[in-house]
Amino acid sequence: MSYVKNIFLRVLILFTAALFNTCNINLVSPSEENENTGMPARNASVIIKTSPDKASIFIFDRNTGKLTPDSLTSLYEGSYNITIKRLGYLDTTFTFAIYSDMKFAYDIILTEDPIKWKIFNTYNSDLPDNWIWDIHIDETNLTWIGTFAGGLVKTDLSNWTVYNYSNSGLPDNKVYSIVSDLNNEKWIGTAFGVTNFNGQNWVTYNSTNNPVFYYNFFIAVAAEGFVIWAANDKGGLFKFEKNKWTKYDPTNSGIPDNVIFAVAIDEHKNKWVGTYRGGLAKFDGNTWLVYNKNNSGLSSNHIISVLPDRQGNIWVGTIDGLTKFNGKEWEIFQIGNSPLRSNWIESLAEDNYGNIWIGTWGGGLYKYSNGAFEIFSSDNSPLPDNYITAVAVDRLGNKWIGTVSGGLVIYTE
Image (cartoon, rainbow, N blue to C red; front, side, top):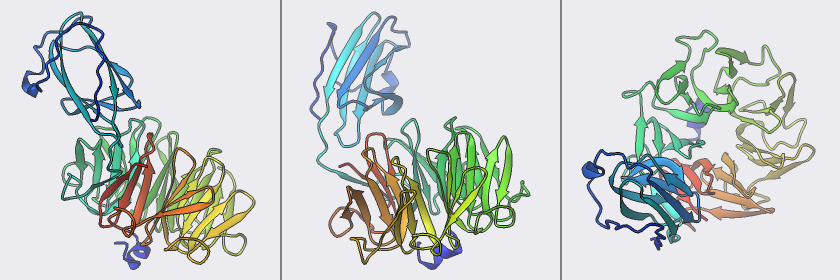
């Protein structure tokens, strides 16, 4: 990470089946090698519904990418082992045998998992590093995890794929930021450049192949459709558009500082740039507007995280508290005037109900809802670490939490 961050030591489910065809269901799980006969099951289909819906459908522990309600078609004759997975609910596994002209429909009632906190680390999963820098959930509901020294991880919690310097085109094992563009291609900020991964090919942009770059530490990346914005810890802000990089720094733009830790884009396509010494900069594509402690209600010029919410507010995480800006008024939350136990605001996320989740450096995790804070820490919850480096919310509302030493935590309310 940058020299600044290193200074601060940041180092059963009840199963109900409704069968709409008369056939025998093999309740014995078959071996994967004998899952089918190799003969197409013509005119056959299986419809799977669940309550609640949006559960993932796995065949022989392989994620089909389908979410309930959905149907399985183009099957081969034989037996299939199906698992239904939804975070916050127990897995349901069943087996059926299908042949030509058979049509099944299953309606499955999922049972809530009594365990609301799930922890994944290097001891109980294939996570390569317990220090997580970033978490990104893409449009297919796959989760991508950037680690301090273990590379990049892709997971659906049943399968873990680790990409690192040795086995892929990733240029460095330190991964600080991940986003997806409109093609669902990944853009990855690393300690040695920005890398594009389309699922097969890796392309890295850094000082070795592009003269626009001088420093290679890319702390933050953001996607605006097909346009990528990448922030450097010493070299400024960069825009990638139509296969060309453009640099913005204090010598050629209104950006106030070269050291940038955060970039976020609001619904109006304004870029909000968090610098480490110069405050917050807003860029609408033509004009720069700078907010700092001298001309605004910003709590600090040292910015770590930025989040535009769906109500139009801008949340700014600094080393001296959290600031909310509604376009006119500023509100500051710090140790002295709020339940916050740390003024270092490392990460921010908004959930499906408009609540703001706040990860702090040493003070735990907070939920801000209707003007009130709820704290989650190692003192009052299963959270293994109070140093919260990343927070992301999936389409089902589960909170994915990255820590410095405790690995990955998933919380289901």
